[in-house]
Image (cartoon, rainbow, N blue to C red):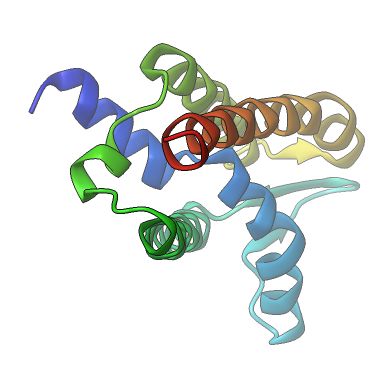
Length: 148
């Protein structure tokens, strides 16, 4: 296995921006209602995320997404697991994972991040990277599964 494929798989499971968005809007509020605070409130409007709950949740969400999408697509067309796991566009996806790594670094930094900066500056980066990854996945499904 080449270094670029290892980088891709690590990025897919640890730095997936789609899974991070699901974590921010679904899992984080649920954990806070269970009285477990994965985000640490600092002075004022500053907060930071704890790295371990974020990574565990993102790996779990990415794995479930991979499992369900493979089962669904293999029911539509006979697709081997090797074909399914190949990167769609390696450099584009790795650059999206790099953007997510930079955003995650700011969110878990000891100084934390201010709420408005997180929402107005960093969230568009995550949303744009997610849209790129969804578009790549959709066009791969169109090319391989639908047009066949």
